[in-house]
Image (cartoon, rainbow, N blue to C red):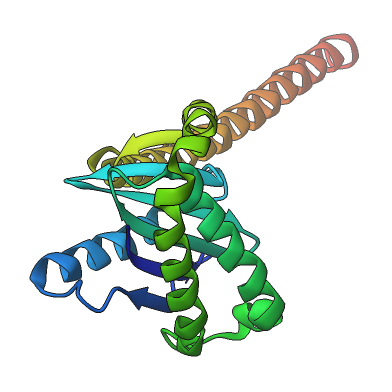
Length: 212
């Protein structure tokens, strides 16, 4: 079963639309939704476009299409193939309706009216999974090999590690520029010293021949 679905802009993690099962509420679901928002913040241009992330008793599946990340939280037993087919369905419809408006969105959940379509699609795919389960089992096993599987803690910690690495890299770049400038200054001083030494030698030679 799909428990909740959230769409977010990949560039800054801004939530664009969301839909949750009516019976799925309470503190636990709010925690998972907040966790999903943290996950959006960790996405980079190098993030996989399809990924499954284990979190507690559930699993996130996300799909990145253009400027939008489509994410759903599902039960562990829910078909991975069905989950990604559901996300691909949402991606096609959302892009058709709002694709050109995504970059201009300024407030969270600017496209909350898309909840109606997501609710219908979620119900359709959840009801159909039982009938299609056996015929899709082989395809699901193949999909597992193609779609990256990660753990939520690893993903969130990796984001912090990448930020630390970027900070250190910036520091090294600054030190490198300083050493480069110092080297250029020392080379310039060395050149001036050589020129001065040659000039003094020439003057001494001229004095020797013409004065003495």
